[in-house]
Amino acid sequence: MFNILFDKFKDIFCDIKNNKKINKLKVEKFCSLVYKIFLNNDICLRTIDYFISSLREDILNNNVISSINFDREILFFFKKKIIDFLSFSEKFNIVHNNLNNSYLFVGLPGVGKTLTLSKFSNFLREKYKRNILITTCDIQKNSSIEYARYLSLKAKVNFTKFNFLSKNNDELNVINYSLNELKKLSRTSLVVDTFGVLPNNLNMIKKISCIQKILNPTETFLVVDIMCSKNIVNFYEILKKFIYFNSIIVTKVDSGILGGIFLSSKYMINKPIKFIGYGENVKDLELYNTKKLVYKFLDISDLYVFIRNDNNFDVKIFKKHFNYKFNNYYNIVNLNDFLFYIKQMKNFFSDDSFLSKLNLMDNKNIFDKDKIFKMEHIISSMTRLERSNPDIIDYSRKLRISKGSGVNIDNVDFLLFFFNKVKDNLSDFKNNNYLKSIKNIFNKFNF
Image (cartoon, rainbow, N blue to C red; front, side, top):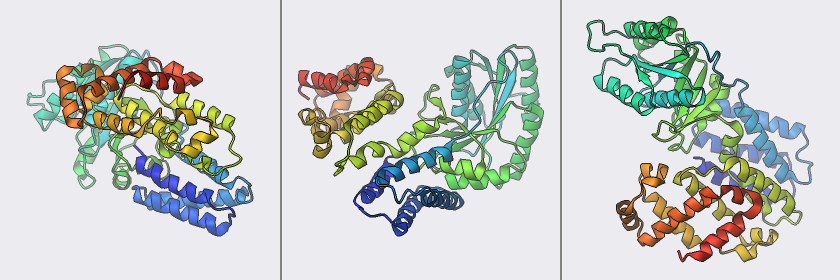
């Protein structure tokens, strides 16, 4: 998600590493480079100005410049600053599990609002064992109604019995009917979809405001696309005059490389992000985790950058830090996770100076570049559905994938075998046996 950001930050910290003497001028240069990176990644100017001024002030006030290990200090200081900047005190909570409640979803057209609503419904059903009733106020297009009905079936939840073909086909009538349905049920959550609204369409915005007043929802979610950070701030400035929002859901996280919305939402919108959505499956929704996001945001720069030309490098500290990251942030569920994982491992095993400091030169060929290159090509030749559900890959799919990636079908078989082996034995990998386990697997097969 943040590959471009990682590469840019890595260059900055490598530059800091090569500076033996640090002064205020170089701190200003560092802040200027961070400013440019944020500016190029769709973050609002006011957010950047506030972040940079706060970062500069804290660096100078905490005597980071005078530190012997300035490079490490500034990286961990920078990481802590981002964590503080992205952290929200509020936590998601179902107010009363035994009572009925309701949720309202609002957003721009095309942000994936209806799909996100079905993911949220599935989340409530699975985690909180709630009964779910979905309804939609997007009644002008029959296709929108049928899509919401279809997604409710995929999420295994109920859809309203309101007759959308009746003469009383009105948004407020839909809400009133659904509330009457809700009164007849117990431990049920009513999840309401709305039509996409544009900032210049005040009539539609006022209509959603009326819906909110009648519904009186437990939570009103603002659904935003990860790639529309600056636009969403302007959109929110108009919406907040008519609609009250409790929190934000960020969608299409798997397709965005910018991620400015995560920084902008805290300072500009001042509403917590509670969920992030990725993919098209109803299970592709997870609770927002600040530390997990920051580790992806900075990737492995805190482990990799400072190893070069560092005579004071402590192997024990590195291994402890790496094991912590591996245990807490590397979860392999599908081939998308697996691709991310092997790219990270490739970074570790591509630098001889890095391996020699860890006394791992014997393991240099564990992640051969050609093998990784083939793996990346094979996974890239798969469809989204195949990457999300590797179990559906049969012989005909393997044949198509092998032709698309320019490898033998045996290579596809090996990749799937390797993926399942890593996934099934992840606990071994997390208990310091990952190097030995990977080496044993690769030695058995010619890839």
